[in-house]
Image (cartoon, rainbow, N blue to C red; front, side):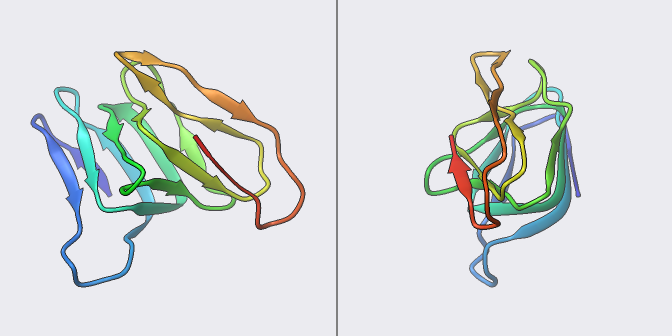
Length: 117
């Protein structure tokens, strides 16, 4: 799924299913931000092209085991908390105030590890 627009966008809870899981999500909104109004999971990849994704503790972005976060930059990152599940090395694609400030972790041991920032 690609979030491709020029105004504010959001992913909302419609009350009809469990937490949405996206196989692939592309952020491509050069003029505004994408707000999570429900927690979501990424199972394969999230690609940061343009536009930030806004999260909260209640509306968390979770990156599943072996999923990737690709091409984050000053133009596109997560503003808010993010969770990574699994033992993989991972670069958290976070930032604030127009600046990408990644946080890197090295893999742990065991498939149930989870780290959030």
